[in-house]
Length: 162
Image (cartoon, rainbow, N blue to C red; front, side, top):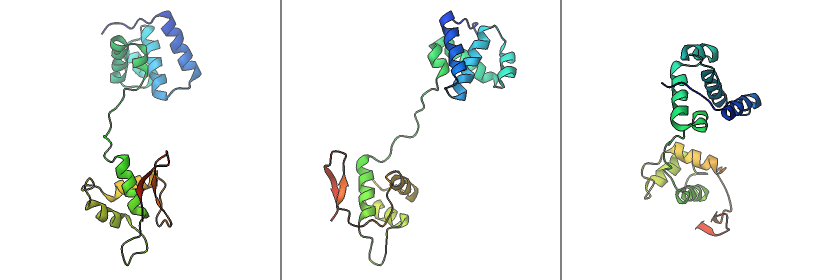
């Protein structure tokens, strides 16, 4: 691998970056790796000084050489799991939780909501944990009385509740 040779302005940027200490520990470590590599420290020395793995040192140096300083410092974006339920689905779940529960029940439970929603299109694979998280995020607790509908920020009713 080619040696790291930082420009003067990059060295000053990294020194200020580390001194301010307002970034994540990972970003500060990456900056220190580059500063030490610029001082011709070997990977094994950097590993001992910063208590990081050899792979980390090699990866940060390679990223700097291939993609530049900012890329070497920042976390790579991660894809994560795609959103499974849209805002419309969320509104439908909340609306269902706000309706009168089945006969003989005082309130909706997660199990009852799950069973009810699984019968609808688009909810065939929903589970009670997904429902719990959606309701928690929306700060919905059951039972709720006197709900007339689910509204958008614009005030337009999305799902009326009778």
